[in-house]
Image 1 (cartoon, rainbow, N blue to C red):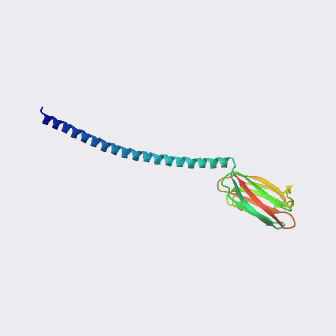
Image 2: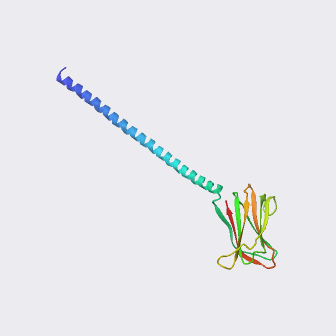
Image 3: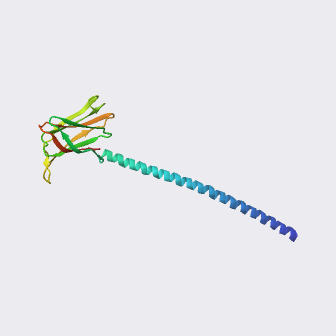
Amino acid sequence: MNGIEQRWKFKDIAIALGLICIILVVSLAGVIVYYVSVVNGKDNTIQTDNNQISSLSSEVNYLNGVIDLYDIETLFNQNASVQAGQTMVYEFTANYSGYISVTMDGLNLTSTWVKVTWGQGVAGGGGEVIYDETRNFTGGSNNPFGGDVIDTEYFPILENGGSYEAVTIGNSGNQTITEVLTITFYY
């Protein structure tokens, strides 16, 4: 082999190696672009999964609170006037089982009574009554700050699908009573 042929041979090898390097660089760039998109897709999937886990954790915490009766809802909290021999009815729907407290805060509780009714069907008597209990307010304890007397009665509530609940406040006395009535639902 002479020097010219040898130079062409090295030149051909150099060109071939250059082409191979260019092909490898382009291939490497293509692989990098592909894997960056794969990693970004995985990052999006991980973020979506983390959001779902957070949402489910919040829901579990809420439901654990329901099981443990941590949630409280004030259903009624205002002055209530009931004329002598009359009643006042407050109806509500319980979406969970729990209990309610009925608190009266006033001057004359001894003639006041509370009745809690719940059952299946339409409120006001169109369905089956499952629970019906009446209790007299006894006058409770004196307010430590003087004045009004406070008394609280507690009643169970069972959510049974399509249920209704009613709290009736009655006045068996001979004069109108005006007291602060608070009905609180614990579930």
